[in-house]
Amino acid sequence: MREIVTTVKCNRTTPDGAMQRVTIEILYRTASFANRYEIQARTGSKTATGKANSLDEALRSVHWQDLDPG
Image (cartoon, rainbow, N blue to C red):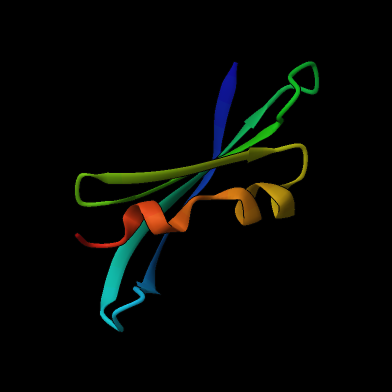
């Protein structure tokens, strides 16, 4: 079972210097799962995800480049 811990809306600078509005959901699973934290970042129709046992690791594991235009 996953629960949404929080949703954050923020701006991200793309590699070409443009500003991109991103919605980030932080999800938590019970300790019985291997990856307790999951990050889902979305902008438009693009999504980037990351999973890990700690929130810091999950944020670092997100494939942010999946949100880049083009």
